[in-house]
Length: 391
Image 1 (cartoon, rainbow, N blue to C red):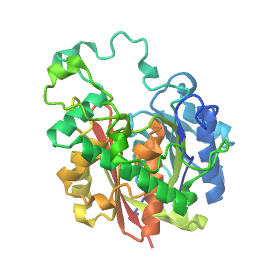
Image 2 (image 1 turned 135 degrees about the horizontal axis):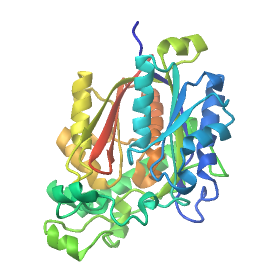
Image 3 (image 1 turned 90 degrees about the horizontal axis):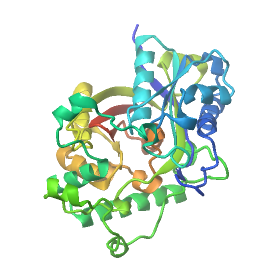
Image 4 (image 1 turned 180 degrees about the horizontal axis):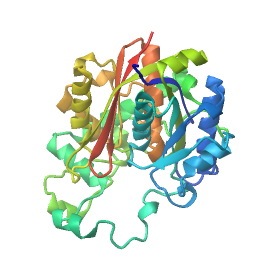
């Protein structure tokens, strides 16, 4: 019997600034994730006891986000004790990977209904907290393979800008575009169907409309480092806070099941999970695996880049998206049409599901057929997913 995997609902919180005083900073991450899980059940109207598994992306699995917090969120959301849950970490793509695992489980017959979700409260559990205090996280084998050492993502973004000839002005223009698109989507109500307001926050907190190239030109480069300048003399030091993603708080959740199960429950699918892939690349350049991941998923789907109507490409840094577009030939007017992480924010474990939630709703609204999402991930990896809209 043929089994597919369809998305019947996708919901997210508005994204808050991930710092003390941010709109969601007082919300415990367990409650933050529980909120979207409850909203998912309310919007589908299904009995939560029917859910076979909840797979949650969480990057900094320590403190309040440690100890398989997805299970705690499932219980906090009021799901029956019988519903299991697990927490996974594929860095920034954690909840996109959660969707892959959910879809694979449904297609294989291991699940009939699964939820892919993600959360990160960066105001309460700072980025890097899960390795804080470790004298050496690499060990001998990795040090032998990379004797000069691996580097932080900001330096990788600078290397990408240098290799692909992406200028400071290119990045600043891209950043302004991200904010303008996110602002327009907010004002038009394009996000309304995907949002579950929480703690008085009804819209994404980080959007800044009305910026100019002249104003962005006054910002200092964010990652200037004398030692790295000696190691990588090709770097021009042009990435700023404006052309990087925002530190954020948020959660998102997506319900996946077979078309047959959706019909049985009276639910209309938003899209089918058509194809998925994962790829690795140079961990020094780190953020370029979106390029082979995109090529791999297109080949697997039997499609070309021109067949794709909409793209979501994680805006970890502006040069990542711009280099990806140069290599793939994608039309940038189809990319992140409602803004990206530069404007909306990047709550690490939630971002894959946040992007997918935005993408599936945008695909439905656009009337297009295919959409593709890809995310760069720490360590030089990327997920890629193709959706197909169902009439």
